[in-house]
Amino acid sequence: MGSHSHPLPTPVTSAGAEGLAALLARPGKAVVALDFDGTLADIVPDPESARAHPGAVPALVALAPHVASVAVITGRPAAVAVRYGGFAGVPGLEHLVVLGHYGAERWDAVSGTVTAPPPHPGVAAARDELPGLLEQFASWSGTWIEEKGQAVAVHTRRAADPQGAFDALRGPLADLAARHGLVLEPGRMVLELRPPGVDKGVALQEYVREVGAETVVYGGDDLGDLPAFAAVNALRAQGRPGLLLCSGTGDVPELAGQADLVLPGPGALVGFLASVAARL
Image (cartoon, rainbow, N blue to C red):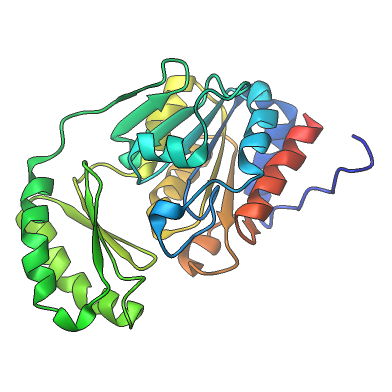
């Protein structure tokens, strides 16, 4: 083990302890799936300047050869997560998979290409109406629209009153989503409109089934990760061990309250993965 390895933190739940034990005992049967923003990358005011934590790629490279698969599941377009993560062409990450747009898109390191279905027509229609809708809330200047191809998002983080803008826009954006056959997914100071039936839980369950994993580890930080947590709990109910990691000290209590292990941000989460890899 070497003198540099730290003791692994202990999961607060018995199910989590079982999940960690299964990961350590049979790593080749485990999938490790992780969100990107807030989990492998620190949250920053401008999402376009987000980059993976410096320890993220080394930790994944150390872990990947021991486990069945490492997957990044994100709301971002797959190609953007690959670019911001620095995941392409990395020795040791030849089998990394990035599931973008909550699983609607997929990038495989093996081929280096992204596969995706055509965008839902409601996304373009809603996007066309957004500027006019936001103008009605002129007092919320500083909100901005992020174009995601398979989805469209409104960020309120840069508004003078981010929470006030978020609260004021939530209802009108839910109505807009419903009108175009979309769903509204709230996050940390972001409201995203996207097609129904696409979430991290569906993506994770399909991927675990594809790989044939018996143990699943999932790490996330925001409300969009709740469906993935629910998927792990569903797999645990079927007798498959699982470990739920929350990155952040309680920014999102709904998620932290369900986690087996709460790690204070991407640095700690990446450190945990590196410690696991050191034991395998």
